[in-house]
Image 1: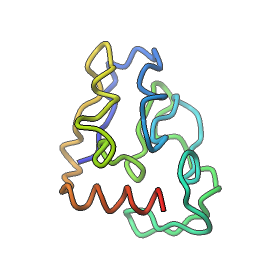
Image 2 (image 1 turned 90 degrees about the vertical axis):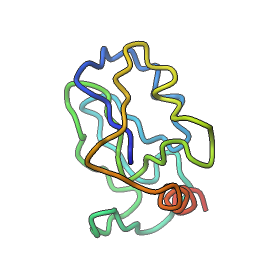
Image 3 (image 1 turned 120 degrees about the vertical axis):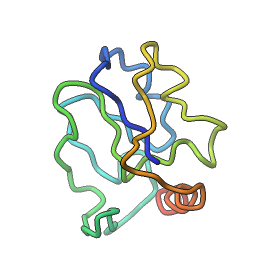
Image 4 (image 1 turned 90 degrees about the horizontal axis):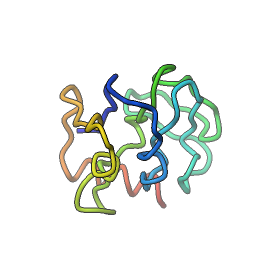
Length: 115
């Protein structure tokens, strides 16, 4: 399952530089698949939507830092544990109970993002 940042976030920003997929953004900031990845051209999001990788997408949150689920791999293939959760001073980076994913699915996403 992808990691989410709960509304307990204090906007300290400690998590953002730790993400190997650049999946974490400050609240209100638009995101793109191309940010911090090697993907070129078009990319199919998990919901089946095709987007240009450089196209800016609407922020997931306007109030606090957020994680783009389509870019989160829970650090599988990079680290033993999600680095955002490891550095968060208020423990607000937690597994998303609505997005259960296998290790194979997370590794597949990692491979798609980092060709």
